[in-house]
Image (cartoon, rainbow, N blue to C red; front, side):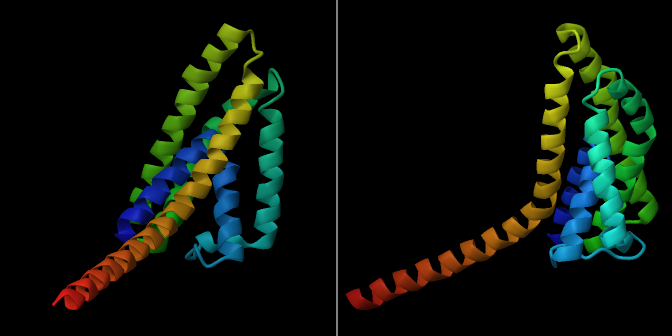
Length: 190
């Protein structure tokens, strides 16, 4: 079960990297640095280094601003064509390696394909359609939505496995309590 949750988490984080390269890296780094929810193995533990977190925070701000400026957003998408798939590969390998024994090369390839696929759909299909149909006016709201989705997806990709484990524990506890209550009622009737 842990391996499956680790793989699902890795897919979610790399998909998020296809929208914004630095958000999932920053979120995983911050969570690994300040909590025990994520423990990154070397060399990916560098993501939790405070200096790397500062750089990632600055890169998040730069990408968010660049993506909201007309004409610059298209140049940003061209530059991000290399960066987002690479970030997806790194985050997939980092998060999949936490729980599973998936081969690092396979993890890098899967992350590259997922993030690259999301970025390609965004840059080749969605953004040009938004620009053409709204005269460019829709690019800023779409960019904000992409940042919100990337952030939410990154957080959920890390937190959901923990919530699922908590849910299973609560469900088992409730079943045990229900069976105990039922046994007590049966014992009282006899």
